[in-house]
Amino acid sequence: MVSKPWTNLFPAKYAPKSIKKYLKDVQEGKVKMNPPVEPPEWFRGKIIYEREKCIGCRSCIKVCPAKAIEFKEEEKKIRI
Image (cartoon, rainbow, N blue to C red):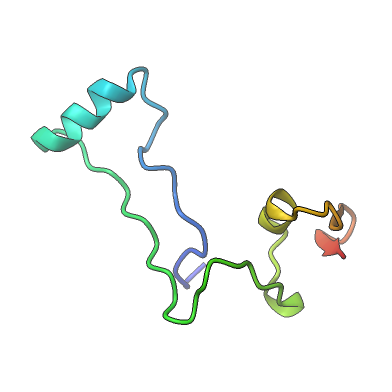
């Protein structure tokens, strides 16, 4: 809870009804957009699985082209 987030937050606090209006309000300074998380210097566009740091976010499952990863619900971990 004290470390920075590993994933990007949704750009708005709540889902806007109109994206065009939301972006216009951002340009006019009426609302603030969540900035993207800065990637680490070594990041090259691949998700690296580290068993000790896994929080069960399932991002790796979404991007695996071979669909070779499954989520173990009882442990909140993945299995490759």
